[in-house]
Amino acid sequence: MKKLTNMIAVLLIYLLGLIQGIAFTTIPAAANFLTSGAGFRFTDAEYGSIFLPMIIGAIVASFAGGALGKRYTVKRVLLVGMALSAASMALFAFADLIEKRYLLMLLTMLLLGTGFGANITALNPFAIHFFPQKGSAAVTALHSCLGIGTAIGPLLWVFYSGRYMWWADPILLASLFFVFLFLGIFFLPASAKLDDSGSNNESNRVLVVGAFALIAFLYGIIETTYGNWSTIYFHQVKGLSAAEANTLLSLFWGSVTVGRIFATILSVVMEPKWIYRFIPLLILISAIAIISAVGYGLSAAVMIIAGLGCSAFLPLTVSFGVQNFKTNPTLASGLIIGTYMMGYGIAAEGIGILHKTEGISFSSLFLIVATLATCLILLNWKITHRFE
Image (cartoon, rainbow, N blue to C red):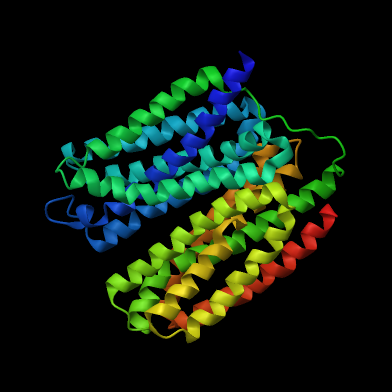
């Protein structure tokens, strides 16, 4: 009976990662609908501003999740995260019936970000809990599911909106979150307990987790620069068409997901620290090459290399951080995800401000990315030497 319960719990964790990924990209996929006359009629400024509550919610939930997980158990953090994600999708589904849609969407995005932060913070230690001997592979596989979900989200939106029933998409997701919430109550263990034998002393563990949090922060800036700004760079600076620039972004995210799947398999047969040491070199190569790349073909190769470089970096950062702070894995997970989201927020909002007010070129931004990638290489080589 216990074996069956564990199998259901493992399936629940990885499917929840998939559904969370779908929910995370559902509203960005609805951008044209939200700004169109047939939809919510948001201005571009209103549409852009709704993502700020999501970022704030994700950061707060990630940082708070660790303390709450220790006091109220990791399971409760995950259950609350599922409830918040379900509520966000339900609000979005019925937003069309409410007059003040903009205010409602701000609340929707706050709930979505808070649910996302709580869920990812709790899911990471749960993955290691069930696969303690292959923690890096387990966390990378979880983030692979998340990545696959982010790719499915826009496709699911196109499917339902093309049939003039867009509201069915968020209703489906809200229903799945509620079903998973119900199953989680019965099948998830109360805590994500990790074997703490042989660990370093407390001060050393805090120092190591802090280093991984810094790495996650720098990585958040790098990934978001590619994810949010590369299409504008290729279109406005490199002269590619908007369609070609969007295709390059799809190649980036596709290679991120493929790279995570490949890294999951590779982590089973080799030490994950070698993957962790190698992949930021690909980020550095892509950041230098993207400035001189000419034409669609070379640009596509650069974005694939960038995606492979980004692929397993965050999951492995989380995995190493959690496994080096086993006394409170949720705190380590929340700290790393929270600092990653801070990097995401700085790049998502700050780059536009720097470009507009200070006149910093997009080419200069990728030089900054190259510098940050060099920092990642030095930091993760230094920190992974502790594992030898």
